[in-house]
Image (cartoon, rainbow, N blue to C red; front, side, top):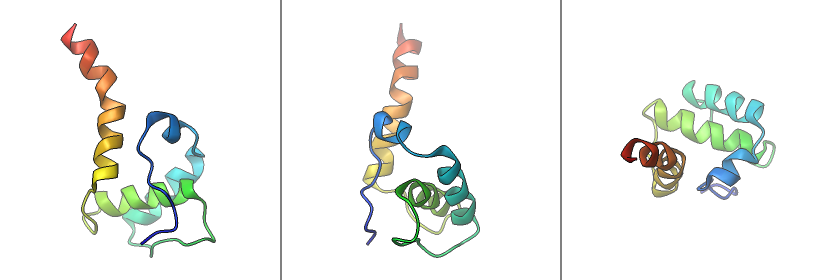
Length: 80
């Protein structure tokens, strides 16, 4: 279990360091071990998504909520 709180809102996602998210994502895709307190929450968020996209981890409820929050505005625009 991670020491970091999962990202679930667009506002929270926008507060993260995008360079660190990208670095973590790349390393998660490459099967790097789960980061600890030596890394930031931004890095961990990216690592978590890279690990999921690589097929090593299952998407969880927090990731699903964030995906819905990110996609919902576009869905609403298509409906109008």
